[in-house]
Length: 490
Image (cartoon, rainbow, N blue to C red; front, side, top):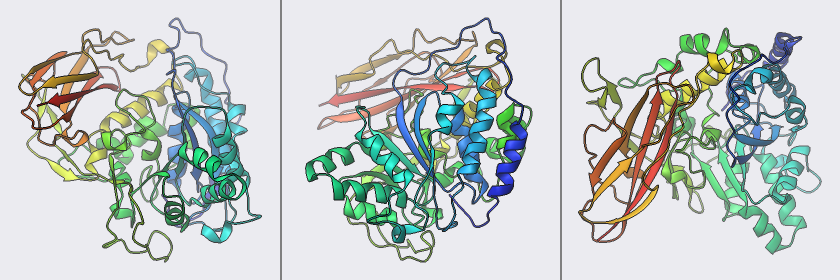
């Protein structure tokens, strides 16, 4: 997500100066690091970093999850706000700061890649703006990297997130189309997953029209139409503390190791690009191939968005045309923020609800901000000094088939916390994620390790989604989840 203004050279110099000589030796620890997830998503990031601070902010956060996502490429690109420049130097500065923090990060979880490994994956994409920079003889290191990753003998899908322009992906797809057989091209494209932060050049609409089977997530139209805006929107009735400048200063920017200096002040908006990879973090809620299930990256449904009111501001004056086929685009959630009680019941639904596409992010925002803050603290602490995520377990199946009127028990027995913290439990029915859209009440109190509900009467098979949120009482508190999908038969 971009706005005008180039500050790349100053930023890169500042970051590199801040981490010079900061590569400290690991600190001894008694507790072994926790194991990183065995199954990780593959990711290539296209970023117009250097045009505005938010890409740098998002890159800092991404570094802290580089043991839970396989980062295969960090590609410097252009965008509507930076049409003739790319700034891999700013990416290198952040990765250098990560390298200085890594000796502490590995005390907490395994799997953090070496600094040199990440540095080797930084390349430059198309040098110009939009589709004018795509075509025969216009391959770039970035487009070649995407093609090579798609051809790798790895059964996992490849995610490409676009934080600015996406013409580097357009060039990769053009190369595949022009140099592979139709069957081979279809096989490679089927492995691709795209999450674009709005359309910031004319390549996005071209890709969606030219490759109609491509898995593509995007909020079309001006920035105000975008789900990712929920990451930074201040809303009356929702706790906005964790997106404030004061919170960022206290929890991210100051006193938390080498990466703190790499996180710049907010320019136009905080981390507009971060939602593109939040849904790839394996937190027990994420199901990346099902954007309609919802998660930290928002919720999207497969639809052909209406062109009404879309305008042309995002793509630099290029009119936005009607979509030619269904894509993963904005879903709407109705979200009632829970309220903590000073006495009596610890957590209960509040009295104010929001029905909005941005609510698909608002419902998780405090959780993923606290998770970020906890990881930032890892950069300066031993295991014993920091907080770590609960290990959420279900004693009941994650997938069930029941009949109308059945009573269904839910249990999180066996859930533990690696730090020995007390745990809070909260069960919710997520009707928008299932086929049965009427909310299903859960037995009170919802904030216990055991819960249950009565299956609704249905006339055809319907699916219900229930989310268990477990939060520890560490500092900052960390939440993890389990999703239970129940099929109700008549």
